[in-house]
Image 1 (spheres, rainbow, N blue to C red):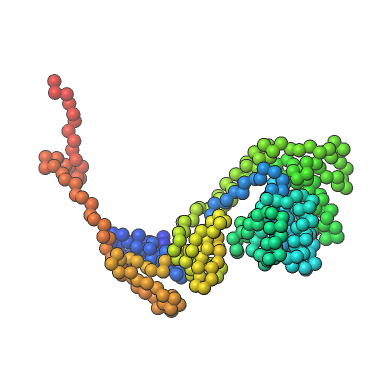
Image 2: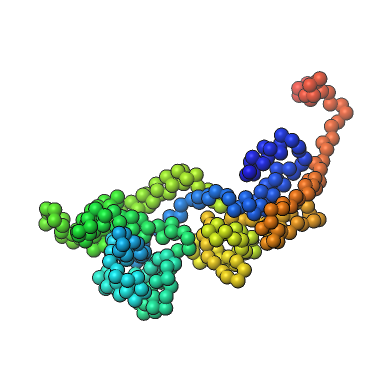
Length: 350
């Protein structure tokens, strides 16, 4: 059981000073407990809104009805580009991205997952040639690339509802106003797009929205989103990890040691024997290799002992902290039968 239930179980049987702290140490050092522990959500980390269009973009690949698509979304305007792929090689993806950057400009930062297409030599040469930063999210943690993941859901819904001509559906999406009051085309190109619906000529005249108003509306929207997310998932910050801490990697079902903190937020590089992996803090559960309950003796667990069904019973010891100093009570103090000290009133000596 967990820390709370183990404490309640112990309190009904025994007690000694330091019992609760020792139970907490045992549960936190338990390999089986860490393996089956529920995932604790962390507070939502807000992504700052860029100050101009196509400064930060995100990309992802998605599959739908046997086809593979490349998606590129702008962080500022939510302008979405979707390209149908005949093959998923790095050369094809690079050519599609070159065509997109030729229309909108080269971004400062491109965010993607850790797919093999984005980790190839051809893609690295592309990033060096076009001089932009390529940043990858934490493996097995799609939430770190949340802008692209949300755009993929929108693109899939548009393609499912308009399988004959999804380009027309994308056109209407780009011309529809967002929560901030402006459409993706207005934020990206400074003008509304002409669609099949009747549109006033005055709305098609280019006019740029004020960046200060966009930033203010985006901050209010993201703050409200963060409050709702944290409240709905009861999110709380997880304990920080330091170099040398022993952790259990949830998706790989193995233990490792923290080598260093990664460049991306809440990510760490973990040594797992002969290899190193990068994982988000949510996928790492602290579990100590040594279980120390006595200052003089430390019980170490080896890999063979963890794999066996035999359990090691640690020795619980008394609390070694110095006792509290006794309070000296003067002999002239008068107490009631219940033990309350009688304090005479203070009067002026006139």
